[in-house]
Amino acid sequence: MLKEFKEFALKGNVMDMAVGIIIGAAFGKIIASLVKDVLMPLIGLFTGGFDISQKYILLGEGSFESLAAAEEAGAAVLKYGAFAMTVFDFVVIAFVIFMMIKWMNSLRRKEEKAEEAAPPAPPKQEVLLEEIRDLLAK
Image (cartoon, rainbow, N blue to C red):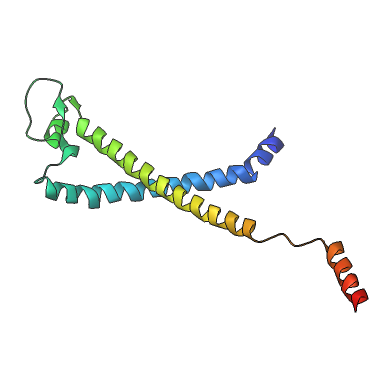
Protein backbone atom coordinates (compact mmCIF):
# COMPACT_ATOMS: atom_id res chain seq x y z
CA MET A 1 0.00 0.00 0.00
CA LEU A 2 2.85 2.37 0.79
CA LYS A 3 4.41 1.57 -2.59
CA GLU A 4 1.15 2.40 -4.38
CA PHE A 5 0.85 5.69 -2.51
CA LYS A 6 4.44 6.55 -3.38
CA GLU A 7 3.78 5.88 -7.08
CA PHE A 8 0.63 8.01 -6.97
CA ALA A 9 2.24 10.92 -5.10
CA LEU A 10 5.28 11.05 -7.35
CA LYS A 11 3.38 11.03 -10.63
CA GLY A 12 3.89 14.15 -12.72
CA ASN A 13 0.23 15.15 -12.65
CA VAL A 14 0.06 15.17 -8.87
CA MET A 15 3.18 17.29 -8.58
CA ASP A 16 1.89 19.70 -11.25
CA MET A 17 -1.40 19.98 -9.38
CA ALA A 18 0.40 20.69 -6.09
CA VAL A 19 2.45 23.45 -7.70
CA GLY A 20 -0.72 24.86 -9.28
CA ILE A 21 -2.53 24.93 -5.94
CA ILE A 22 0.37 26.68 -4.22
CA ILE A 23 0.70 29.27 -6.98
CA GLY A 24 -3.09 29.69 -7.05
CA ALA A 25 -3.20 30.40 -3.31
CA ALA A 26 -0.45 33.01 -3.65
CA PHE A 27 -2.19 34.49 -6.71
CA GLY A 28 -5.42 34.71 -4.71
CA LYS A 29 -3.66 36.72 -2.02
CA ILE A 30 -2.24 39.09 -4.62
CA ILE A 31 -5.66 39.67 -6.17
CA ALA A 32 -7.28 40.11 -2.74
CA SER A 33 -4.69 42.77 -1.95
CA LEU A 34 -5.27 44.41 -5.34
CA VAL A 35 -8.99 44.62 -4.63
CA LYS A 36 -8.68 45.69 -0.98
CA ASP A 37 -5.69 48.02 -1.19
CA VAL A 38 -5.93 49.46 -4.73
CA LEU A 39 -9.37 49.11 -6.29
CA MET A 40 -11.57 49.71 -3.24
CA PRO A 41 -9.85 52.99 -2.22
CA LEU A 42 -10.31 54.22 -5.79
CA ILE A 43 -13.97 53.18 -5.77
CA GLY A 44 -14.34 54.83 -2.36
CA LEU A 45 -12.85 58.03 -3.76
CA PHE A 46 -15.44 58.13 -6.54
CA THR A 47 -18.34 57.16 -4.24
CA GLY A 48 -17.53 59.63 -1.49
CA GLY A 49 -15.88 57.21 0.95
CA PHE A 50 -18.56 54.50 0.76
CA ASP A 51 -17.10 51.21 2.07
CA ILE A 52 -19.36 48.27 1.43
CA SER A 53 -17.16 45.85 3.37
CA GLN A 54 -18.32 47.43 6.65
CA LYS A 55 -22.04 47.04 5.94
CA TYR A 56 -24.00 44.67 8.18
CA ILE A 57 -27.43 43.85 9.54
CA LEU A 58 -27.76 43.48 13.29
CA LEU A 59 -29.68 40.29 14.07
CA GLY A 60 -30.44 41.12 17.67
CA GLU A 61 -31.46 44.01 19.87
CA GLY A 62 -29.49 47.21 20.29
CA SER A 63 -27.49 49.42 18.00
CA PHE A 64 -23.82 49.86 17.35
CA GLU A 65 -21.95 52.59 15.55
CA SER A 66 -19.74 50.21 13.57
CA LEU A 67 -19.27 46.59 12.62
CA ALA A 68 -16.18 46.39 14.82
CA ALA A 69 -18.17 47.62 17.84
CA ALA A 70 -20.94 45.08 17.18
CA GLU A 71 -18.44 42.24 16.84
CA GLU A 72 -16.59 43.34 19.98
CA ALA A 73 -19.85 43.28 21.92
CA GLY A 74 -20.51 39.76 20.64
CA ALA A 75 -23.68 40.74 18.80
CA ALA A 76 -24.99 38.52 16.04
CA VAL A 77 -24.46 40.30 12.74
CA LEU A 78 -25.07 39.44 9.10
CA LYS A 79 -22.01 40.81 7.30
CA TYR A 80 -23.41 41.23 3.79
CA GLY A 81 -20.69 43.76 2.96
CA ALA A 82 -17.92 41.23 3.62
CA PHE A 83 -19.78 38.73 1.45
CA ALA A 84 -20.09 41.31 -1.34
CA MET A 85 -16.34 41.96 -1.15
CA THR A 86 -15.61 38.24 -1.39
CA VAL A 87 -17.83 38.00 -4.46
CA PHE A 88 -16.05 41.04 -5.94
CA ASP A 89 -12.67 39.39 -5.26
CA PHE A 90 -13.88 36.25 -7.03
CA VAL A 91 -15.06 38.20 -10.06
CA VAL A 92 -11.72 40.01 -10.35
CA ILE A 93 -9.77 36.75 -9.94
CA ALA A 94 -11.97 35.00 -12.51
CA PHE A 95 -11.52 37.88 -14.97
CA VAL A 96 -7.73 37.93 -14.56
CA ILE A 97 -7.51 34.16 -15.01
CA PHE A 98 -9.77 34.41 -18.08
CA MET A 99 -7.48 37.06 -19.59
CA MET A 100 -4.38 34.94 -18.87
CA ILE A 101 -5.93 31.86 -20.48
CA LYS A 102 -7.08 33.92 -23.46
CA TRP A 103 -3.52 35.27 -23.88
CA MET A 104 -2.01 31.78 -23.59
CA ASN A 105 -4.50 30.41 -26.15
CA SER A 106 -3.64 33.20 -28.59
CA LEU A 107 0.06 32.32 -28.25
CA ARG A 108 -0.75 28.65 -28.83
CA ARG A 109 -2.80 29.51 -31.95
CA LYS A 110 0.10 31.58 -33.32
CA GLU A 111 2.45 28.62 -32.82
CA GLU A 112 -0.01 26.25 -34.51
CA LYS A 113 -0.40 28.60 -37.48
CA ALA A 114 3.38 28.86 -37.81
CA GLU A 115 3.66 25.07 -37.79
CA GLU A 116 0.88 24.73 -40.37
CA ALA A 117 2.40 27.41 -42.64
CA ALA A 118 5.75 25.64 -42.92
CA PRO A 119 5.43 22.67 -45.26
CA PRO A 120 6.71 19.43 -43.80
CA ALA A 121 10.16 18.39 -44.89
CA PRO A 122 10.10 15.65 -47.55
CA PRO A 123 11.20 12.20 -46.47
CA LYS A 124 14.92 11.46 -46.62
CA GLN A 125 14.40 8.86 -49.34
CA GLU A 126 12.68 11.40 -51.56
CA VAL A 127 15.51 13.90 -51.11
CA LEU A 128 18.08 11.26 -52.03
CA LEU A 129 16.10 10.24 -55.12
CA GLU A 130 15.90 13.88 -56.22
CA GLU A 131 19.67 14.24 -55.81
CA ILE A 132 20.25 11.09 -57.86
CA ARG A 133 17.87 12.36 -60.55
CA ASP A 134 19.68 15.71 -60.68
CA LEU A 135 23.06 13.96 -60.98
CA LEU A 136 21.80 11.72 -63.79
CA ALA A 137 20.38 14.72 -65.63
CA LYS A 138 23.84 16.29 -65.73
